[in-house]
Amino acid sequence: MKHPYVGLPDRQFWKKEPGVLEAERLDPVSPPPFKIDPDDRIVTAGSCFAQHVARFMSNSGFNHHITERAHPLIAQPIASRHNYGMFAARYGNIYTARQLKQLFERAYGTFQPQAFSWPSSNVAGVVDPFRPQIQPGGYLSDAELEADRESHFAAIRRAIEEMDVFVFTLGLTEAWVDTRDGAVFPIAPGVAGGSYDPETVAFKNFDDDEVYADMADALTFLREKRPDLRIILTVSPVPLNATFEDRHVLTSTVYSKAVLRVAAERCTKAFDNCVYFPSFDIITAPHVRGRYFDTDCREVLPAGVEHVMRLFLKHFTEGADPSREPRPSSDEADRVEAHLRDMQEKMDVLCDEAAIDNR
Amino acid sequence: MALDEHRVARGLRRIANRFRPKERTGHGQVGGKRRPLRVLVVGHSHIECLRAAADARPEPSQVSFLNLRQLQATVDTPKGLPAAIASEIARVAPDALCLCLAGNVHNLIGLIENPVPFAIGAVDAGAIPPSPTKRHFIPSAMMREQIESSMSANLVAKIFSMRPDSTKMILEPPPPISDFEHVRRFPGAFKDKLEMGPAPRELRLALYRMQSDILRELAERETATFVAVDPESVDGDGFLRPAYFSRDPTHGNAAYGDIMLSKIIRLTEGSE
Image (tube, rainbow over all chains, first blue to last red; front, side):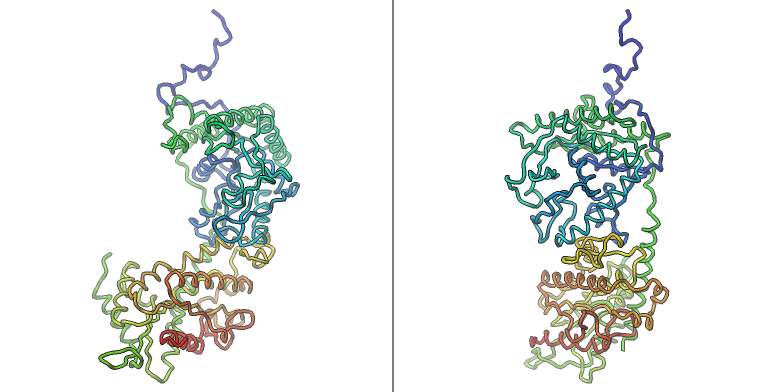
């Protein structure tokens, strides 16, 4: 008997998915319209799960484009603790589409929020309201924050103007907004600096129209700078840590993820070379029976990340090789390392000589 | 690799003989008689100007010196160093321990312009030197952590714990030498680095002050006295005065050492 489903690919039928029997074989990725070459400059951004994506990009031979690096004289563990090298620039987690859109506006000077700094909650000095946890130890003053922000924005502009692929992980719909000018904060004031003042800060839970509109604005902005930009959107599978809505956090999580998923889908239909990559779908699939979540039912385990990124490699690269090495360090880093090594050797000689002759 | 005890012992004897106090005078009590208050200065190259000052004094010295770079050469592994230090402390049995470790970290970073010139964060100016987009900006908190990681805080604590009842001091290293002509005249090992030029003056001073702040806080944590540089040896901008330059790019001379040695002795005797 003839019906519309006859002849459709196996992937469109639940019972034909190999992952039903073997979770590791679950592969819900549709063939993407483009590939990523090893030299393509990839910029990543987004919520917590975006950090997994970013680490994978850095460690797997992709050209994870980092435009705001720590000075090479800073030891790598210290630079990492200060959040250098995680994303293209030190913007930290970007949870909402509005935050992404405003980041671009701030970097290009078309939006200057009234909130300049927040007092740090645990050290003297200030933090950046738009990335309050980026600088352990905070900033000495508004002046230092401004100096760092100037470098930061320059790095963001460079990232935007040089990137070939943008991977964005949508994370949240709930946010805290400055009622004076609409600036969106990544974390509620008072949590990691600043203080909660209901007169100037309001809770906002974006709906699918709003998220889509913000995403569309952000992607349009990027395409104006980079017309050939390839865009990959994902939704973070990490549930909300807390909700400000008067309901269970799981219910808010499902709402939030549904909105983000719909917004991402609308973007893929509105923009060429813009695809949805199903990170959320893989981690939360019935096939894996919850085994990709840690015991807190929230953190994603390495096995889950590995599954997601294995499929990313499979579908976005030619001849994928998961064992690819991280890219070598830059000439600049090599020059500074050689200089410091040389300085250390000379200082050792000098200090030995000081013991011989110091009259 | 196991510690070669005989080799260590030989090394320690050699060092001890070289630096043994000439004769003791002083104020402790031994068998009813006053005995000298003994001071052991432990550190790296910045202790050498104090040693030179002590050697130049006519009176017998109550101060001994332990240069950790020299001591390190007598042990097979870095892990052997604490045991060798403990052995020397036990031998000298000092009433006061004065430490000056890793005092040239600021010079290592800032004596010569870096191949990637940088600025660090500042309270009022925002960045030192200004215009952070023209130099690689390093937030103050991160640079501080970088310097702190080189300051051997764990070794300082360990050394003090070897003589817990002693008077504890941490010596501030001398300020940087601002006169690059002096560096050109006495470049020492840095001769082939001179073409890169000096790092900006204000940056060099900021790095030095950051290092001093870290040492001051370390002294507080260790309940040690922070022996600050004497104002007499500092010029109006905060650099080492030319009268106290040694014949190299970073160290103080014996005259500088004499000032600091006097401070240390006064602190040991409780007269400062």
